[in-house]
Image 1 (cartoon, helix red, strand yellow):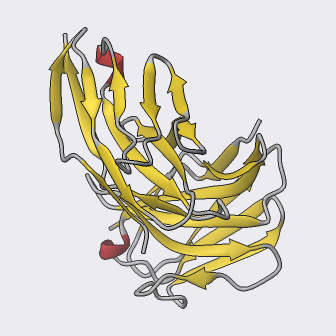
Image 2 (image 1 turned 45 degrees about the vertical axis):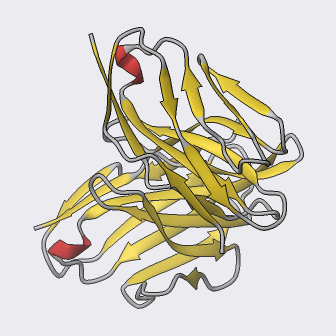
Image 3 (image 1 turned 135 degrees about the vertical axis):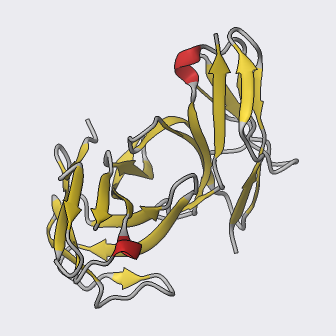
Length: 117
Length: 112
């Protein structure tokens, strides 16, 4: 149980285009999903927290108009990188909040590697 | 605020050596503690967790004990394998359990 998928697993796009990344919780309903960004050889940086049916909460320094997050259902959240530029190239990881053994925890997707040319 | 500090890598060991990766934390209340592993090109996988003081999490030969008195959650394995080569992240979950604070990650390289 507690499986989270991401699609696509990797994407290469031209500068100026928009890219949408999907995050799905496959076997549970996630009221909260998280989006992280990871630069090479660095830790995860939380970008935003999204709750189903409401606007995402962005961390300081993350441009909400650049990184559009939609959490339209309890099993799907999307991150759209708008007008992507080479500096947006990174590894994007989502997680879904769930509950196991009476405790809340996050279940991570496999990540999406974005390369902007 | 909450923070997690873990030893910087890379840690390079020979196969069958003993592994320790130190992790200490600063938090208010009673957080949960986690170790995640990230293999090259992949997302994070939960390795083990502990939800209260003195709990020991264990999985795949790895173990860590939640030490409230020293605010530590050190990861250990008695005999590492080449397949254990990965990046290991220590993380702290807030009281509500819905937010994680990550350490900087420690890269482990195991040589045959």
